[in-house]
Length: 256
Image 1 (cartoon, rainbow, N blue to C red):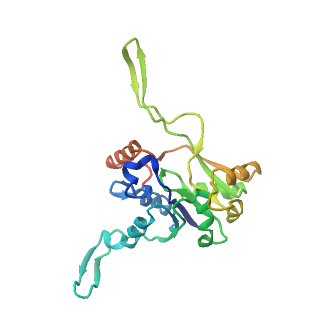
Image 2 (image 1 turned 30 degrees about the vertical axis):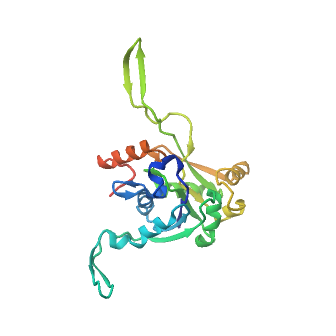
Image 3 (image 1 turned 90 degrees about the vertical axis):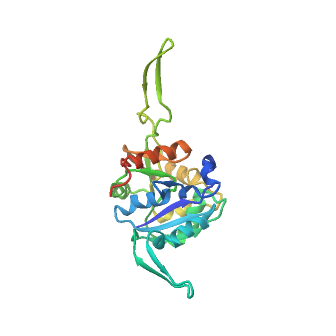
């Protein structure tokens, strides 16, 4: 089963980083967010990716074109230009399709544009800015059991600010707020049947609006509830949080 990753957005809320690179290329632990997402899927044996490019897509192309040589030892013949890789380095067993889907194309439009590269088969999809310790096999099994055309992973949004309880002018208690205990949001990590493309009109179609709303109205959209770790990367604070987890060897989305 192929995995589609929507990696073409502008990332306007993270301009400190995205003014020079696409959002999925923001690094956590010296590796781009895109690599971290792909590791989640490859852990469960899903190793063929269709990446929908847009804003600064050339940077993502360059990353994968140089993927093998980046972490390898090289011998370069300057006269002939021949390059010999003498040590394979950390090379993933992945097949990656890099598809230009337009700078201003919406999420639904990107899915429609890459449909021909996926073929007439079930596929998974996610955004290029979210991480989770999700069990992909359970997600796929839940979708298959539902009989629906699409499944969305529902997650509880993490609280963004610490909680301070006051008594007069003194702080009575201070605690970083946990993930909220009520309410669910779209956490990405979709499973789609190929018919999803029939619900998408064109480049201006936003996946989360008419396509998914229509499927929901028809009873063809199911949910997979993920109670574990989930974190999007929208702000510098989010980047710092994810970097802190990585640096402390407690990144829950990676199992080595």
